[in-house]
Length: 91
Image 1 (tube, helix red, strand yellow):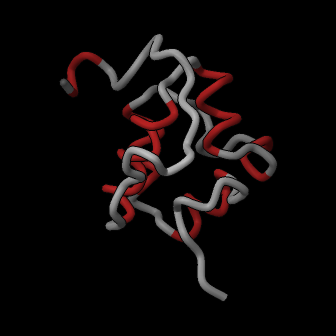
Image 2 (image 1 turned 180 degrees about the vertical axis):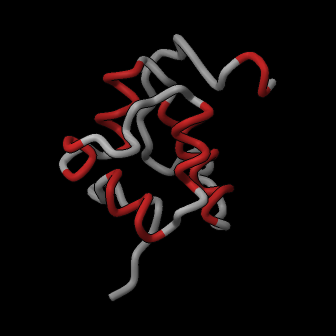
């Protein structure tokens, strides 16, 4: 079975299991998804909405960490209002 980090239905737990380098992205954005029991059920869209993070930006960071190209314009990825991003020390 082939997995894509761009699959809108893939859970956060699967993302972190298949692409372990994405754990750093969640930590950089100060998301508590690592080790969270809800990560098995949440998608990137769910987590973005819950944490007030721009979904497109988060997906691009996860894709970069996973070694895949990020979603481009016209990808159908809806974004949430950008209220926060990576920790300031990472900018």
